Image (cartoon, rainbow, N blue to C red; front, side, top):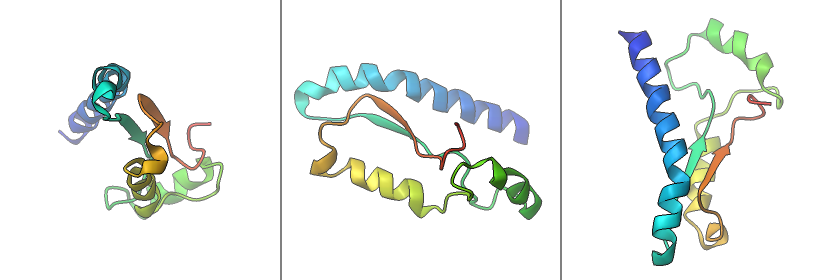
Length: 98
């Protein structure tokens, strides 16, 4: 069951990543921005210490994210400074995907 939920989660994330540009185009005339944040692995209790130790070297920045890392990006996306950013899928994963 856990593996099935992980696959479902990936499918849902992929769906929203594909939907973001369309929603951005539809909603931008109303001043609404739409973006997707891909935080990569964030230790929120679902990973064992062994899993964390195994995956940490895969991050270009040499550490896993704290929950504050993606949260700060999401908070910034709600500010006026980010009003020109829309339709994007932003990987804020500490270099995990590079």
